[in-house]
Image (cartoon, rainbow, N blue to C red; front, side, top):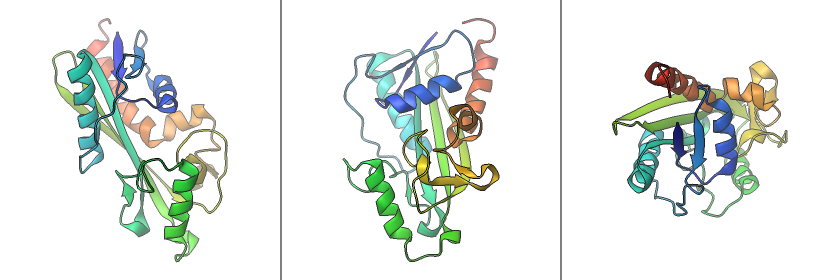
Length: 200
């Protein structure tokens, strides 16, 4: 069974491929399926943006489509950058530049108050064109230095007290069990098992 992942992000494709637990599933990115354009993420929530991306890919390709929208919400900033996490510092800003901007926004506050959460929404369009959404959240705090070479995005500055490390320092195997995306995928994997355990 093939599922199109509505992304051009190869880091995300690699991480999500490792989270799919049902044997016999092949995941392909939009780029691999021949779509090079992106759709504007005009939703007001992670779920809405994930559905926008899933519907766009499904309209182009049909079949089974999965999309993810995720972001970082910082409590002191009333949840900002949230759904704008990928582009709030400028459309072409690198993640180190985005992290520097976050540090600038938080500089006036004591670091013990830099609490935050990663959020993820998965949108899946099945073979009956029905839409399903699965969500996950992972709490931690922002730290004032970048630590770790694993992961991507904001992982080097997202610290989890219970593991005494950033998600950028975690082995992929651990991160893929406890992250916001992993928690959403646990629900998605349960759904796939219920729907397709009789055979792919």
